[in-house]
Structure formats: structure tokens, C-alpha cells
Length: 393
Image 1 (cartoon, rainbow, N blue to C red):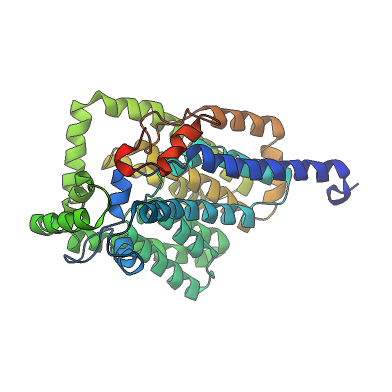
Image 2: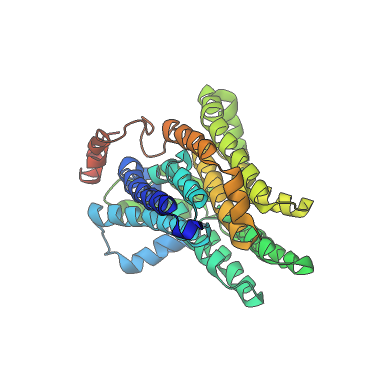
């Protein structure tokens, strides 16, 4: 009897569908917490004092928001940014994963992973817009016109936040690489190289003077319904070298850094390594370049730990890239659905799901991490309704 007419198969797919819907709703309710001052400050960056990195979103919002937006307007924008990123992630996963129990297991693990929970916990971070641009780039055509479109979307992402390149440029290139055959695979280098060059240019021209930063701070303080977070603006005036030196000092003087690395970073690294294995096992026999492309797509985000200490944030992006890489492998490979089913049996999937559902990292949105689950997390979610100066973490 074929699986298409097997009542047990149909029932399994139906109940897994219910679990996916429940996982989406609980992920938002449990983890998409009220935004921090740091993320909200980024929404007010603009080009009023000249070009600055990360200023594109704030520049656009000056045309959308009133001159003095209320807390409700700012919070709603922050929610939609993060929510749109999650929706974009779901679109890619649903579009390219096989319609099978193994495909549903991948999606269930992703929705219950600490990668997604930590991403949602950083409400309002520009990463949500980068995820949406990445989805658009992957869905773009794969010919040379598509290569140009992908390159432009990477550039737009870098204008939103220069971290677009280490986060997602390699993943976008991986999709091109897997879709090609022979020499045409090397067109994947074009958007990746363009993104790296574009980001380097932004650092060369996008370092405002101290006077410009002071003026920008004053403008934000006048417009925003909260006091701007000074460190958010300070980063705009730092080069990669100066930023790296500042964090080198932090590493040397603060033991907290090593707790973040060992506690949070090790979990992210282990999950990323498992996803790398799953990609290789699902793709089947491959050359060294394909292995390197998959490895780079998943692990590139970890490179940001060399210049910053947002260990959880970088790990969460690496994990999300790992899940999307699995979807890209299933999209382009022959026989990938069968190999995925053979490798991701239900005992393996269940074990990975349980580990992801019970291991939490320190979220950026609250000091207590994400251990407050339903129903008590509702008390934290009341922060969306409290005056910003009275937020409780």
C-alpha cells in the first residue's frame, strides 16, 4: 500500500501538522518578549547627520512614523520586524522540505529549537529584516538575472545591518551552488564576493564623527519615547579593529564572557554540528567544495564572535541557517527525501526535539533567560503593555 493512501501515514501527517501549528503559536507566546532599549534605539538611526551604517531602516521609518512616535507604534514595529523574520523562515521551510514525516520532524525541531527561541527573544533586532531579505533572495530566479537580484538584496541587507554578510550571504550562495551543475556552480561566488566588498565599503565610508553621533543621539532623544541606549550609537563610530580591541579587553577582564561562551556557545555549536551532519547525510556523496559551502552557510555566523560577544545571537542565526541549509539540500538534491527519512528516524528526531525543548540559552530580551514558559511567561508578556520605563525583566 502506498504512503499516499495509507490511513496511518495520513493520520501521522495530520497530527504532526497540529503539532507544527501549536509550536508556532507557543514559540511566539513563550519567546517573543518585549524589546530592549538597545534594539529600539536602532530603529531611530537615520541619515540626517550623513551616512551611517544601519541607518536604512530608521530612514525609511522617518517617512512612515509620525515625528514623535508613541511607545505603541515603536513596539508594534519591533514586533512586526521579528515576526516577519519568523514568517519568512517558515515560508522557506514549508516550501522546500519534503512533505513527509521526516520533513515535518525537521520543522518541528526547528520551531522548538533554542535557535528560534533566542531569535524571537531578541524582539525588534534588525535580524528579522535580514531573514526576510534572505528568503526573498533564495526565492529569486537562479539564472544570471537572479544572481543580480540576490546581490542587490544582500547589499540592501548590508545597509540594514552589515552583519547580513556573515549571517546569510554564504547561505544564499549555497542555494546557487546546489542548484548548479559543473562550472555554473561557481556563479555562487558572485553575490558572496559582492556582499563582502559592499560591506567593506560601508565600513570605509560609514564611520561618523563624534560630533555627528552626539547630534544623532540628541535627535533620537527628542523623537523617541525612551532614552536612547548609548552603546548602540557608540558601535557606529567604531571600526572592526577598534570593536575587536574593545571586546578583547572585555574577554580579558570579565569572567562573564567565558560563561556565555561555554554555556551558550557550546549548545549552539553542538546543534550546528548536528545540522551540518544532517545536510551531508541528506545530500549524499559530494565533493569537497560542496561540503565547504554547506559548512560555511551554517558556521559563518560564528565568525562574529571574533569581534563581538553576542554569543547567543550569533549561535541562533547559525542554527537557523542550518535548518534552512537542510531545506536547500532537499530543494536541489536527487533522492534527498528518501535519505532524509533514512537518517532522521523518529527515535533520533524525538531525542533531538526533547533536547531542544529543554535546553535554553540566555536571551537578549530578558535577564532571566527563557526558562519562564507557559503559563507564567504571560507575566513577562505584559511588558508589551507596560510603560517603557516600567518594564519588568
